Image (cartoon, rainbow, N blue to C red):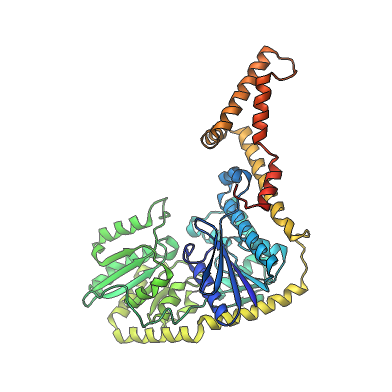
Length: 517
């Protein structure tokens, strides 16, 4: 089959988290069993095409529209990002599909990445669940409130999911939530676990951390944010050290600015907590490292901890288990479906530092039990999560998507698919102008901000417009009756007019060109 994976995230330059990891494993799993795979994803700085060991990766920048939707950005920044990146992903996908058709497209539900592919129905589509925006809103994850901006993003995701040919979830926990949220038949959501390469994430190989005497190592990998439960691990550390003083903690992940109670550094708060408890010397913080380097860190650890408040199916569990390390995780979300309590690790309640400390301490003190769980964790990965096996399961879903695609007709957009990009761009531009006009008419603060921005970015045009306004005002004072404009005013009018093409025509032209001018 010829398969396109549409995803904002793909390592290394946009390898932000579990989605990027999944897409990479799936792409190479599909390639390994004989399929042709291309990935359409976001670029960090420049658009390009790269070969990732047999997988062609097309990196694109967010689409740009005349004015760049400045007014929308003020009112709906998340929606603006979603729409412009979704347009860019669709544009590249449709270009590739027009040159050489795909048999199927596969994409995450997060931020409606395949919105246009689902609405336009040019190819069978599988949408894979991660954590929809409605879940973030419902549980206030990452401080996501029920604003119009966030609700609009959730609505776009629901449209895409509802129009997909097949929905698949990595855990029953997430499938249950989405079925209830969408009023979608639960039995139609297929469960396909996350894949991993057990040869790359293997117990054998180099270790990134040198041994520190007889100290045992507890490892955390993930963003430093509330949802990942890192604060509860740090709270548990003094209790663990009281029972097992020869323990070191290695925390790998980027800082975030969403500490509870305000826009503060989570890393700074964690260090303050450790300072107060006197545990600083036992904890090492390391910024996020590339996926290819992670196995050496897992091998350096004795225990991996995943204390998430919610995770649909964290890759850190699979990575640690595949490297033959037991996992202490929480019962929140789908973690307990990957880490079987007492078999490949230990499961504790979320938001419970005491339970976390007790579980970690029990493994640190019992070498035999810890090694038993480590061996069984590795075997569980080999039995259930190998990426070739998961890729083969996905191929069966692609076939099912193809059957459903043939029997369903498009009712959401009846024009030719080629017209969708300019239609969407014009609609977004007009929406932006509507918001701009409303703000300009009702807010002096907005006017001042607009003209300051104009002066900084278009100084010559700003001066021409300012002079034109002055000349027009002076002309009315001298000769209030309408008539032919004086020569200076007429010249300025021609100069300003020459700088302003018809905005709708410019938007349409940007769709036909590169969309960045």
